Length: 213
Image 1 (cartoon, rainbow, N blue to C red):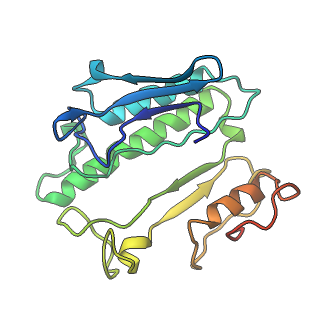
Image 2 (cartoon, rainbow, N blue to C red):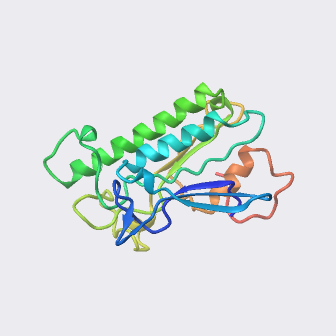
């Protein structure tokens, strides 16, 4: 699908520590090149390591080894805050209820994002970076999740299932001269048009689905 490498699991969810889906191990590293074709490796040696730590390590490797003269695209689909609900104890600030577990998972995710930003800064890539942060759906109906009073939940077409928070950021005002927030509806197809607009690509790409937000 256009990626040079991929890293992580293939199924919908795995254990955060054992990396298993039911009875099989599901954590891999894949790569593709014209010379070697598709390379596929099961990372069983990493069993027992919290997945966010593994994603952190891999992101650091990619950023530190990247040639700053070339473009870089990283799609970091963190496991947090997806089920099964788990986080290491150090991320907990309370233990009273299920929402404490969700908050701990979010604390872990925020740490990962903060580390990735620090790696980008150290590699002198941050000033040319566009960061997009978003969720794919609302939370499932459970004690762990809250959709803020919106009707429905994950898998529903009501707002509780499809309405999420998101943002786009760049430290470089030349990349993003217009800043602010909107209460307008933004659809997933608008991401493409917005990214193309920020990159200055409209002279090449026209008649695309979605709006430049």
